[in-house]
Image (cartoon, helix red, strand yellow):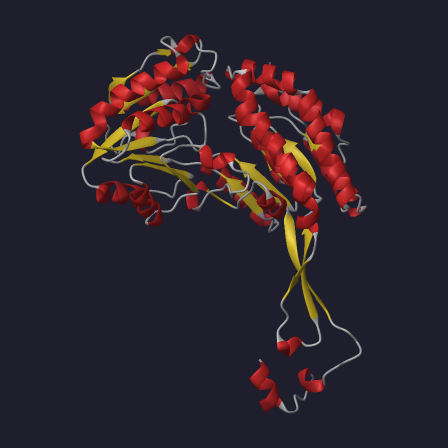
Length: 460
């Protein structure tokens, strides 16, 4: 099935309607915000089966994986916001210096206003609705733009949102990059974009015209370091899980492996066993193994296999857009598989002998969205201290995204801004400084012609 483009005229009409609705102050109250969060929570429950079916049709994603990596994350986010919204909304008193006596100072959180949320196709439910939770919690309106590459999911989400919310409050627009361009021609108060660094630059360029703040959740090549002291069986199992989750179509999937030369052969065999444990002898028949989202994605990712010698896997089926989990060895760091984000189940291995080699390799490249280290904890902490990444795990992969109490976001080429939990509320909010000064005392020292300035100077 295909998705019909929302017209530029309709987009403009929705933007104007949402601007008027926000100006009515309807979204500002805590009671209203909590009601809308509960409506979204109920909608997720009511539409769970339809969303899971759509994810299976578009990505061959099992219901178990859909619930674990998509719906449950959004539900958990909603519960967190419902529990803490009162405290997050409350103005915060801050210290007022002596020079401002008798004034009092507070910081007030206010909604930024009209939000645009653009999501990718790889986690089309989670990466669209999780930011929406923050927008609702902060008191914003929102236009949601799902990906056309997962048409069944995008259609179900539109039906769910349309039946749950008035479009002057929350609306869904559909279509390709022409629709993205039409949206970016409009003025918003915040743009939340999840996608590639290439498209992130285009979003930021468009936002700059109106000085619109952006949250950019991008990607990049996330390294995974397996040091000499690593527990190879555990490392192989957790890397295999992180790399085959969503068939590697995860922005924080291990993208390439830096492995100590003495452990390379041992890792290949452990990885083979881990794959069999996760997906069975016939991986293609596993209901938990996702397919490439499109023929174009299949061709791109399968093309990377020629960039090294196959240590494991390598079998593909273009008709089903299936790519077997593949380990590559003898990979040239200058080859395409090491220059572009793979976003698929191909894992190139680069051996090293000294940890300093791995450290230098990582530091010479763009800052990744994630970095994973397997080995001694103290060595992992030191490796993380000397590098920069959006998030990291020691002796694990992916799991830092599962804790809604921790920030999720990139740095440098992998993005800007953070969300999850309170940070989602703050992403769509403005922290406003408010100073209240009583009228019963009006000290003359601040006024021209600045009498007794020598005394005032001591207080400054």
